[in-house]
Length: 375
Image (cartoon, rainbow, N blue to C red):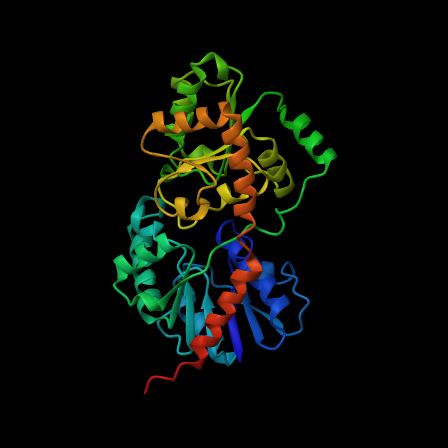
């Protein structure tokens, strides 16, 4: 059997984490199947897979482009592919081999303003519809996302399999003492701080987080508390800066932008509380990452987040700054609650495993290939 995987987003955030761990674990657990990795020209040398049953094929067509609609099917035909896995929902109609697609969430349908324009929105809608209806099977990352997919595309429930994400192996390690000292010194982290990690988009609800932080700092017990926000493209969302300005929090809210993984691990470990008040997530990996490092988590009681964190986090109403502030207050002041969340969180994070998840994905490949061809 020859399986092709589209890895053109190998070095991205989010989907890139999914692709990297998928490929890495497949190379460990499956030495029999021949895998063809469809990659960007600049990634040909950067993707290092030692297994001899893995081979890279360069594809210059960028993701979400018109050219990929023609070029990907031609590549699959030329390489005699039996099954194609699209990890980011694009399935060109001209593909005639078996196919599995991963639809991580329906965010492009729920928040079309994140796309460059109407044409991009129409393209995303068409591609999601095609992936849902023309693929042989769909993978998604939570039961919440599965329900979204079933509601929007009206397909049989048994066509969708939930396979959970897990923590990137590159992050899942204990920082050395010298790394911790270096990060404290570089970022001047002398005060207790609440931490947010994720991209900077309106559905992440960061303006309400800043409002909740402002409410908390009105109490004398939290005068020293800082808020650290890590995420790229902060400059695109001026509402965050305005919220900081309105509440005169310039000295207390810090925007770090992108940080390397070794720094991120230290920040998770140092934070007094991790706060993630998102309004919508397909999975929501950052709370799980914080739990791995023993940091108590406050997160939303909506979307996939309760499913992912279970009873190992403080759940709050993300539409209420008062609820977010109260959750932070309880975690920061109740030592018994902190200890419980720390213990349960670390245990919960270790229930998720990329090896286990990729074995499930590999089983789906096999099941799809065993189905009789339609006449």
